[in-house]
Image (cartoon, rainbow, N blue to C red; front, top):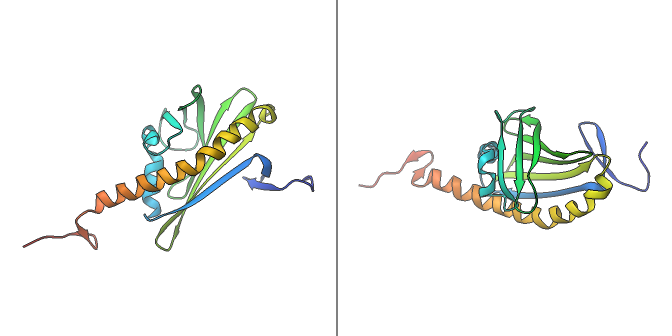
Length: 173
């Protein structure tokens, strides 16, 4: 039963205390498919996420695939892709013994592009110990990460469509 003094959000029918939940959203003027493609290029996350030094998966961008992420500050940790809905979302979990950090990413089509949401929360027996310090870093870095993703996606989309008019190459006479 939830504690009436705390607010919760739900992920896969699990209650997560709101205090351990960080969320940022941003409008990006590209189709959701562009965002999904960028997300799936794990070895290129460092190009748009200033808090990531290196990331890799040991297999396809699919639920259950394991890998490793190295933040710009700190040591690398194992990660696993825990959820993947092509074109809509993915969740990755970084873990050390007794502590998990969950990164959920969603994208939805909206007028003029895509609405992108990144959510972060912590679980595990040591979440009370590590969570506050990590949460502070995430709260400071996530808005910058979202702005960087926006700039990267819009620049990439424009470069791919440079010189095209309504999907056809423009010609000059």
